[in-house]
Amino acid sequence: MSIPSPRPRTTPATRQDPGPDVVCVGETMAMLSPLDSGPLATRRSLALGVGGAESNVACGLATLGHRAAWLSRVGADPFGQRVLADLAAHGVDVTGVRTDPERQTGVYFKDPGPDRTGVHYYRRGSAATRMGPELARLPLLGRARVLHLSGITAALSGSCAELLEEIVVRRAVPGPVVSFDVNYRQALWPEGREQAARALLRLAGAADAVFVGRDEAESLWGAAKPEEIRELLPGVPLLVVKDAGHGATSYSDDHGETFVPAPRSRIIERVGAGDAFAAGYLSAFLDGRDATARLRLGHLVAGATLRSRSDIPTVPPRAELDRLLALDELSWTALNTALDKEG
Image (cartoon, rainbow, N blue to C red; front, side):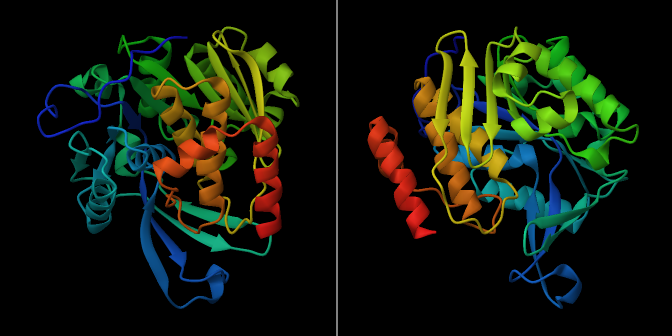
């Protein structure tokens, strides 16, 4: 699959000429979490932040030097104001976001535990659930090089599902590469796994680039191995199968099958790591890097998230990332060992 050649970085003199590298579409919510790693039920103070799968990707791409925009709806409330302010502070263009005076901004709570961080959502009837196919007509989408969406949006409401059908299946926005992260969230699908399996397979099969976890593919479709997932999605030009700490495999028309192991890392929290991987991968994709470099950058950005309580990590300087991407295979393996020892 080919994409337009990289554009120069934005400067004041060129800012009006290029469109965004990536437009990410989906819900972002206010996030409340304990100040430490203690369980939610015993904490008396919580920190306020924001989080959402697609906006996490937008923030990651902006941090890596790309022009990223986020489209959605937020409520006319303090939480909506916080979402817009935080994303803008990360360098994300939020000028296309609609403020809804009738609906609230969604909220979720993080609940740290000894083995994993639980998440409790309060998003039913939120402003973002009113997104619909009319959003696909916004000129900003057509000016992007990549449109990034996820299966979370498909489960929020009927109109949100129609929006994804319009962009991913009907291709109402010709030109941009359509990137789709399956992002299966069981609690969001009222009719159960079978409903989710059908809907998400249809969307994934129509996208240009697909991100899917091996575990969620097994849960949804009974496909336990990367090659089995590829058999389910044979026509997707670019498929990336993530397998947690093991590694990731990509299948593409240009590079065939490529596997890159994940550097072992100390894990503080897993929330947001998949979004970070997508941001790193798409960054290398936009820069025209090869399949190995794309997977490596995905792992490096995801690793920074795993070692942080933030969904949007501080990534190493680009010069350091470039050095790591240029390592030979043996040195990359040694990097795994070094990171493992640090943990």
